[in-house]
Image (cartoon, rainbow, N blue to C red):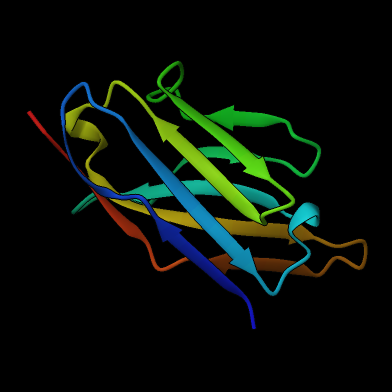
Length: 120
C-alpha cells in the first residue's frame, strides 16, 4: 500500500519560514520524481517544486529563490523548505510521487495535503 504523509504545515507570519516533509512508503522511492503542489481556494492546483530521480530540480517562478526542494533517499522523504513566505503562498500543499516505467505504465500518487497559512 502506497502512502505519502505530509507534515510541517501551519500558520506563520509573512516573512517567516516553514519546512514541509513528505514521508513515502510502499514505493521504490529512488525511482520516482517527487513534487510539491499547492491549491489555494478557488484556484487550480499548481506545481510548486519538483525533484527528479537524478536530483534535478525545478520551481515555479513565484517561489524561485525562496523555496528549496530536497530529498533523502535513505529516509524515503522529500522536503520543501519555504522561506520569506508571503500571504499568497497560503494554500493546501500536496506531495506527489510520479514515475513512468519502461513499459509505459505510469504510477502517480498523492498525499492528503497539509495547510499552510501565511498571515500579513
